[in-house]
Image (cartoon, rainbow, N blue to C red; front, side):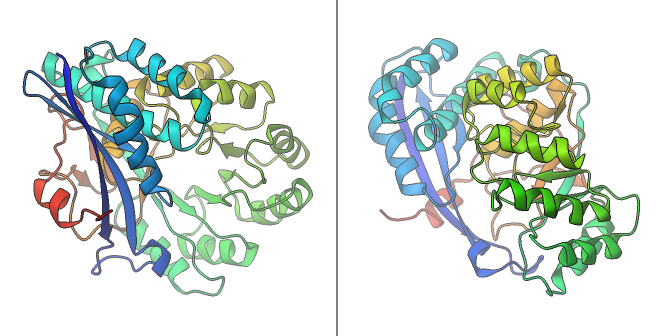
Amino acid sequence: MKIVDVSAHHLAVPAKKSGPDVPFVWSRLSQVIAEVKTDDGLTGWGECFGYGVPHAVAATVAHTLKPLLLGEDARAIAPLTRRLFQKTHLYGRYGVTTFAISGVEMALWDLAGKRAGKPLYELLGGAASTQVPAYASLVRYPEEDERIAAHAQQALRDGFSMIKLHQVTAPSVERARLAIGEGVPLTVDINCEWSVHEACRMALAMDEYDLLWLEEPVWPPEDFDGLAEVQDSTGVSLSSGENACTAVQFKHMLDARAVTFVQPSVTKVGGVGEFLKVATLVQAANLELAPHSPYFGPGFAASLHLIAHTGRTRWIEKFYFDLESPLFTRPLELSRGTYTLPSGPGLGVEMDPHVLKEYRVKE
């Protein structure tokens, strides 16, 4: 199984107009899809984190990783991934380089599953369940926006069992809590906006509305000692990890006792293998695994397999809106807020050729 081609598809698919409306910034999402082909006619798909930096990520796949992979045995996933990391470390161990490696590594696992005729979760050793509940991850709205309450309520009616907000004020969190009532798990993602002092103050203010976790409240996100101070001094459970790359950074986070919920992102952490290393660290520390997965492509499918396989995650994160056109030839099955694992070989999904052509961004 020699690798004969590696490519990156930069797509921009608009949000679906008939679903929950989203602010302009979210109305057209850039995505980078990695494609790896082998000499036996198989194609593997992966997804690189590309929000905000799609051109750089796609260029890294096409011009930096491709020459290192052509002619290599696609079955040698671990040694190939190690080589990619070692040969690119001068460009930066984290960020764009690791996003690109994540997508390519994921595509190699997709190929491995297709070659074996097994879905990824079986290839990894099985799944705790083939059903994965989802939580609705709302985008950020202005503080007084009626959509906060309206979309939170509608998500519950759609069958989602938890709500995530991206609000940064206590009154807007209150609006959501009043809308969904008591007993429904509620989380808030701050996206790294506050100092440690400010985070302590706001954590206490928001926790009045019974948060399951407060996500990434501190800037910079790698200030693990600062996160630990917020969690220890307020008693509010924190989550973090979507901005961490490789198990090395996660080990530093866990050593600092910075969080309760650990959030690796398969499109950013280094791929499937690196995600599994993080999951092992989380299990050893007896913490909660809560992967970051607001994607629409192969990264979301991979997250489903990994969550089901580890059996340590209660929900998968689902952006609470859909795209104008599904990316797959057969969309993933979602019923009453629960996904059924795709049973096909590899990731169990295939990219729609129409989408790859129609929504491709011209460089």
